[in-house]
Amino acid sequence: MHATAAAAALIVFLATLGMTGRLRDWLERRAIFDQPVDRSAHNVPVPRGGGLVLVPVLLAAWLGLALTGLAPAGDAALAALAAGLMLLSWRDDLRGLPVGLRLLCHVLAVVAGLAFLPPGAVFQGLLPPFIDRAATTLLWVWFVNLFNFMDGIDGITGIETAALGFGLALVAALAGAEDDGSAALALCAAAGALAFLRWNWHPARLFLGDVGTVPLGYLLGSLLLALAARGLWAPALILPLYYLADASLTLAGRMLRGERFWQPHRQHFYQRALGGRDDHAAVARLVLAGDAALVACALLAVARPWTGLAVAAFVVTGVLALMQRRSRLAAAR
Image 1 (cartoon, rainbow, N blue to C red):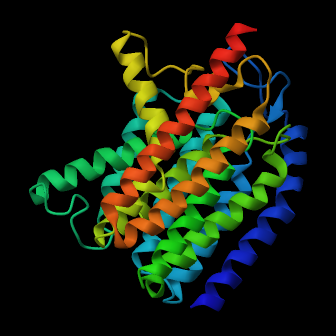
Image 2 (cartoon, one colour):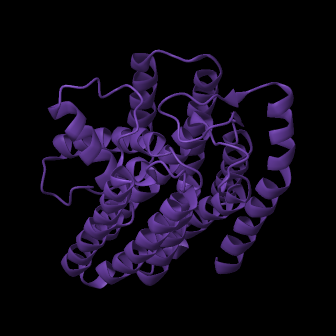
């Protein structure tokens, strides 16, 4: 299985790396750009739609692994549902769709996807089965959307996807669960993200767009929930903890202030950390350092879940505090 996972990841990496440049040229010819506005973190138009290569390549790998029996058969259905979200999100990238329609489609994809997760209580029996299912639905829908919300500066989604992918694979290997195919699926996601960073590192020459972030959030969310359903709830919570904390705290603050929280903004911790310096790479490296520490915490949590979670909370608090400090220093200039 190790050789198969490595081979699949290498194919995803090379295919994404090789085709993304051609996609960028096509997007430029079609004038499909992310135009800078007041809330943007970039100052010039940048082609948008990089997910049109990364996601199909990743979906092909998932389908191949599932159909050959190297991953659970249900992952083929999850890939098909992610493909539907990709098409919906591409339509949204081009012309925009009502928020309610997008959210309804996300909910439907999640409800359908729940049937293909491995059996087990995501909340570890703390909730009755029906409530566990409902809470899992809400958590997955939130993860899909926060993964999209957090794609606001160069490199951040590539870093997060790679960290989650490698972290999931390492946790599966340490816990003796890599033979279920989860490690191969996670490694493919990480490999595709690393290839995309070739084009998305600051200064970015290509953005993922919703066509990339929404299906990626859906697929990664399924892997995290599957990990929790197998009893590894602490690593599943720790790996995305920075994204969960930044997005959730920002949303809660906007709701408490009575703002229109569903509208785009620049209030995430990582966005405010940019200040006025447009220093995407420095903030992205801070996210990378935090994610690397969270991967280590997740590995610790395989054997000592509460210790790993406590250290992870300290790590995320430190990352958010450093971002807040960067924001204050920029405001003082």
